[in-house]
Amino acid sequence: MPRGNTIVSEDNRTVTVTTDGSKERLDVSVDEHIETISHLHAKVHEGKCFSVSDYDTLNKSIAWDLVFEVGSVMAHLLYEATTSMGVIIEIYESPTYTGGTAKSSYNHNRASILTPTMVVKDDVTVTADGTLIDVVSLSGTNQTGSSVASNLEWILAQNTDYLMRITSQGNSNLISGRAIWYEEDV
Image (spheres, rainbow, N blue to C red):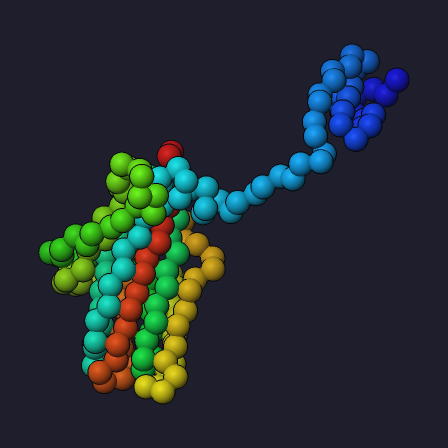
């Protein structure tokens, strides 16, 4: 008899787990399939995935500043932007700012009563940008436009503020943006 942790398939429906000579029988069905979902999708089901979105028309070199005030729970951030004329997107850690208006955020599980701990503000007055941690440049013309969706999340530190600055690269530039995040318990 095998020693240690051994899994032996006895037939198509049973698995025997052997540990140091003792046997435990586990009935499983291999005729069934296993469904898997992404971690982000699981957070939607848990009611811990939120988003904020908006749009604006900006002239060249005008910036749209959003501040993310992370509470006592880490936030895993993804973002998307679409532009008619191109933008530069910068993310800064620990900016200095005053004022601001909290934006409405929405739970992606519409049956959940959970609310996010992170607050997203716009209309802030930034006096110091903080530490630049990410920059993305999008080009575009009125004919083609441009879009970006981050595929690698930023894990934002607890009790830390972040600035997302979207700077227009053209006049009459229609810009839409969305921040998507999920929160983890600590």
